[in-house]
Length: 249
Ligand SMILES: NC(=O)c1ccc[n+]([C@@H]2O[C@H](COP(=O)([O-])OP(=O)(O)OC[C@H]3O[C@@H](n4cnc5c(N)ncnc54)[C@H](OP(=O)(O)O)[C@@H]3O)[C@@H](O)[C@H]2O)c1
Image (cartoon, rainbow, N blue to C red; front, side, top):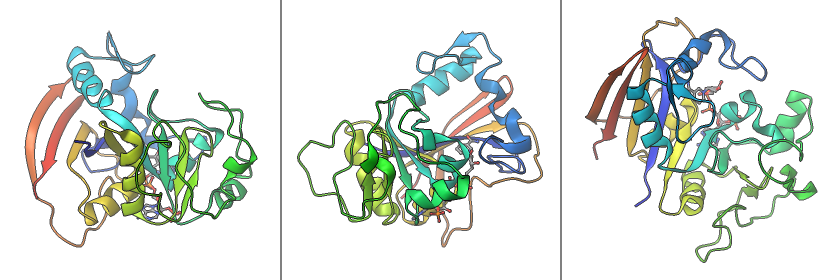
């Protein structure tokens, strides 16, 4: 059965970015959080161009092969430049959760949503988040039978992207439908925390990098209750320790 997981690179003091992340600025002054993706000698089976240590490749590829949909918060979407149609995973479509329609972001970034960027074919004018009508999410399983998409779902900014503006429960439901038997991977501290608060997260992986960044965006924000975890695996690899937890319910 499809699970909701999150696996992020994080400093020992809990930051998933350094200071001043943003569009064109990546992780701000925290770019070393991603060094372990590239400074090994084992090519990833899942991500072209990634070269990891042997131990990290086993962990990383194992997780990446489970992902059927990436579900990101709006900040991750904006900061990563996916407004041009990109996705964080080579094969999985992207669901973005936000309170705002897409055009608000485009105005803020001074850019129009582009139909030309990214790995997928352009989705056309109606893909710009203008529609307020409930619609089926676009993507691989959009044509399959099932309950209607919740209101606030705007399909495809590109044909592999879906914006959900009606809350985390709806976003996870849309993502799970698109993911089929595969898992939903949460990306962004805000979206992880809101999903944890709603009791929707099954597994958490900290790719913990041995640095204290001293500031940035936190993996975990304030929660209304405790969340108990069970350690499934700990793998000490060069430049990173992989801590895999299961949420205890
Ligand atoms: N180190 C890593 O592995 C890693 C991985 C992923 C991302 N990142 C970085 O992390 C940063 C972003 O993290 P973040 O914690 O700032 O933000 P985030 O989780 O990406 O986005 C938070 C935003 O998502 C929307 N959102 C979240 N929950 C929602 C809900 N329940 N209903 C409606 N909207 C909801 C809200 O946007 P609005 O209120 O504006 O609509 C919220 O402000 C980026 O810079 C990204 O590059 C790092």
